[in-house]
Length: 49
Image 1: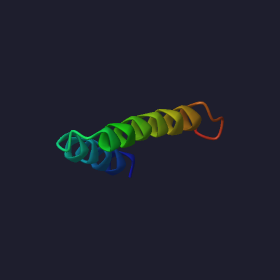
Image 2: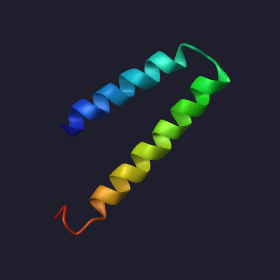
Image 3: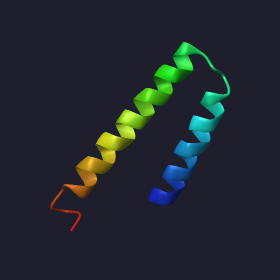
Image 4: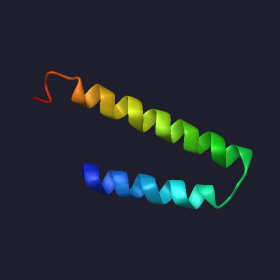
């Protein structure tokens, strides 16, 4: 599930990168920040181990 989510995330980044618009750049930055925050919360959670 995590691998599929990551692959979908990468494909979304590649599609948005083709637009070359400020809105696309904002969305890409937000997605990167969200995924970074999401994975940090998972890996720092005691429930994960």
